Image (cartoon, rainbow, N blue to C red; front, side, top):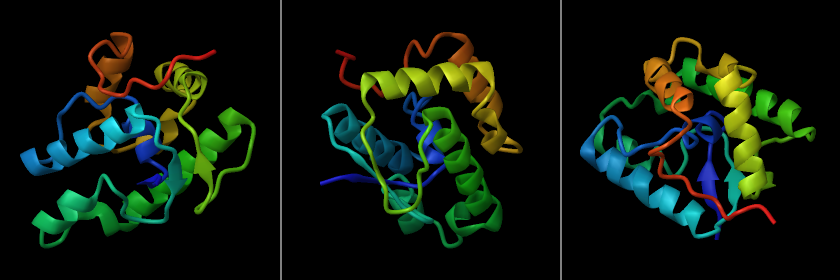
Length: 145
């Protein structure tokens, strides 16, 4: 089984520390990250994903469907594709190996992946996490061999 992730959540998982829009959302997000830590792969989806699931169930009009969020997905997917040197599209699978996560985190901390974060309410929060070396984040991919 694979974790369903939308484009911009490829960036968000890099800095997840247990905080989110609500307790249910954060708890669900934590379960998704545990699945990734256990080695489950990622399948890229268009629109709401496994992380969005709790928010969709608890909010009448979740932002998950907003055009701005869908645009953020496209920008993030394009940036990650360029960084990894391979095209990534909806339906593609991606293994979050230690090497891939390290590459993403370095680029996120240094700016190349941040164009998708424009006007995101969590941007400053994530900046601080990246500046502190991702110390307390929950995503712990398998070590690089």
